[in-house]
View 1 (cartoon, helix red, strand yellow):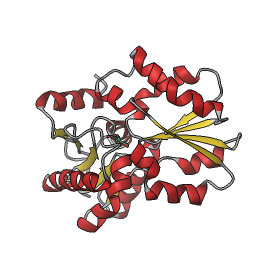
View 2: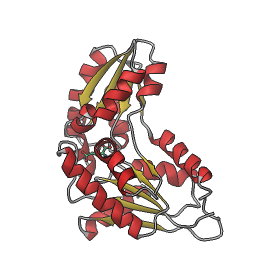
View 3: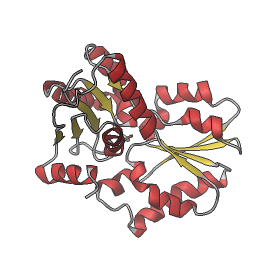
Length: 256
Ligand code: DGL
């Protein structure tokens, strides 16, 4: 048993899609969410820079006593997770990866679309996952241009966001994809818009939120670190941006 909080880190709002999954499944766990905000988006930053930002953020979470840290950002995971594990060997980390494996197992057309940031799609980790699970399946990669910015500015349902989504999703479907993998934690906030764009074309949209939550549960069990259930859970929101941003994080987490 351990009543210390779980840390959840992202470049901004995106990791809140993971935060929600964890909170839904493990309501007794205290959570500290750190949404950088100041340096977002990370998607096209150099790997070195992302590593530096990630170490900084994780240090803040460790200083707050986090027992486990979820890097709820595909981009930061791709650029920094090995470095984080080596730098903080006493902390269990959970990283985010596009759900390529289930998509490749489930596709009926043999074509899978993966939409993510530029950094994630070119990272060594993604390429090795593709090599491992993508055999016999054609994977169409697409950068979600403008997606992160839309979520960061609360413009999920704006007409220009729908146009940006259409510009990315239509060509992927035209290639024959019957599954689209959301490979960035910001994108689940665009799910309704993506669904609208997909319409009745029979395309499934999947993300990694639930799989990550399951991984958190299994690590809590492995290290015997579940919250005791005796303390009232505490939910904190931190950022390198300003107080207004922190308040927006809190509201988006609870969907208010
Ligand atoms: N939420 C992020 C991800 O999962 C990062 C997006 C960004 O900052 O570009 O990749």
